[in-house]
Length: 592
Image 1: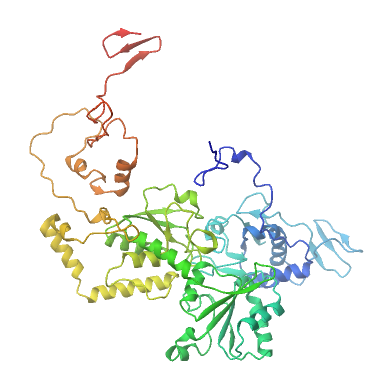
Image 2: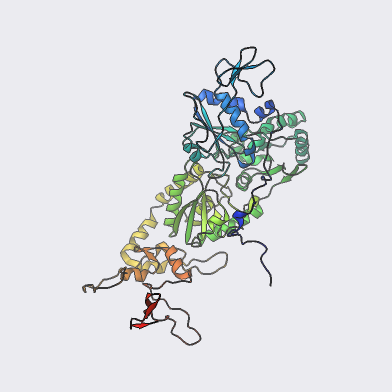
């Protein structure tokens, strides 16, 4: 008999909390304690950050670090706090006291030139904790944000508001999604790159020196784009464009500048289709789909391998997987809206748009707000047949690691763009070969679709009004729904379009009943209804759950057993009553 070597993926072991599984540091933890002060300040751009905080007049600063940079958080905190509280005209001391320095009272040390600095700094406060001593009146405070509520690339405004922060400094990789409440200072922490090796890989990939190529990199490598372009220009490449980081996810190249002759080529040779893309570091699946549909070809300089390699990216496998999920969404009758952001601008209008699209398609939607999406959270809702994720544009494709397949999830997770195509009618969204991921473009597409529907004369509204006058007989004229994956007929593809027939109640006076809850005839006839409204979740619980309860408003027939019983179950009988020393059985006075 085979035994399981580990726990199932949908739950954890009962003894996991007792095991020291988190004693070791993460594999991708990067600690720069060996760097000297000058290099460390340059890596985290301490001087620029302090200058912007001082220029903005901010007094409470939140520092957001990803998990892999938490080892440097305390050192960064001390440098930032010392910089923003530096007395004007005085140079603060850092590190141990030099020879000849003397300590004065009050924790202030001065050297022979008369420059003084406070040697004792407040202890860092994590997520707004109160463990640090109160700052003096007029002093500026700083806080370390760890274990962010959502993806590390997004701005955690929720945690920053817990600290009553005036500004947030974000370190590491960022999706650069627009925020709604707090000003943000971005520090990308430039990763090292061998420019000579990168230039050699570029030459091996693009032998034609007159070919149009756009050089792009992840934000953590963006500081190397201009030096690489300078080397390539010296090597004879005349049509290479280095991109610059901008804050516009809805741009043709998300968050990057465009070539100056882009508009001219758009009218002639097809805009960005005339360019190939050289991307430093592997792009995320959502960015890869966006870029593939807009440029001629993509070549990735993979910095995760040793030595780095250059490969041409293809999205055929990823697109086939996304099309399979889209086909599943077409036949899903219960759709969950998975909200994993409360910070990105326009997320509320997108949620309203999704609820309206699902309702107009005759489906049922459930809104679920989570933090970081994982397999265990999504698996708790067995009634939901497909999820649509509402998050930042980079994290729109959820699950399955780098390829975005989502195979580990109990139910598939699609993007708002995909669910819009799956549920759209003839005047709705359609696949044009261009992938859309940012919220602003999605809302613009929705506005265009509503305008097209309004200009078509509102035939759907007229049909709906006639259906209300003629009753429920119109349901027979609706075309059948089939699952494109299995070819089977889907009887409940549009549960919210099934209108119950009007029920005529008798005028007989109600008879007294001893039931705790009186069930009306309409609720009995609807079966899976709650308050007279069709509820697919209630229907799922009624049909799929094995335990039916001690009583029910609906006549439930179980399978007949081998003794040829009718299958309606046994009659409920009176059980024992009384105390433990003498029970009364069946109410007949027999004591046992």
